[in-house]
Amino acid sequence: MTEIISLVVAKYNYWLYIVLMMIGLYAMIAKNNLIKKLVGMNIFQTAIILFYVSIGYKTGATIPIIKNAHGSHGAEAAVIHAAEYINPLPHVLMLTAIVVSVATFGVAMALCVRIYQRYQTLEEDELRMRLSEK
Image (tube, rainbow, N blue to C red):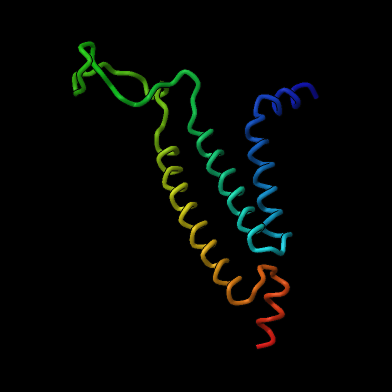
């Protein structure tokens, strides 16, 4: 039992990401307001981005730049084991994901504004009723 508790405490950040993902998923599924669904989607996306950034972290690792003794780069650079490097790929991909997230949020907000201008509501149930009447 103590081993399980120590494992949970050691990986607290992953549990935080799971809680954030579940909050976002709950908001997307259970809420009827389109803005609340959009906020839930952003919480979910943020949890995934934080998760991937934390996966790319290594304790005691450095950035993957090889320098020789004189400080210059090149083939004659000192050999350092790959285990001592941080993989930059997850961080780069998450920068792209942040840009896509902001663009998705902007388009979704624009759609919400247009829906509100036309139907005077952002509630899903009312929108379904008004669309089924036509």
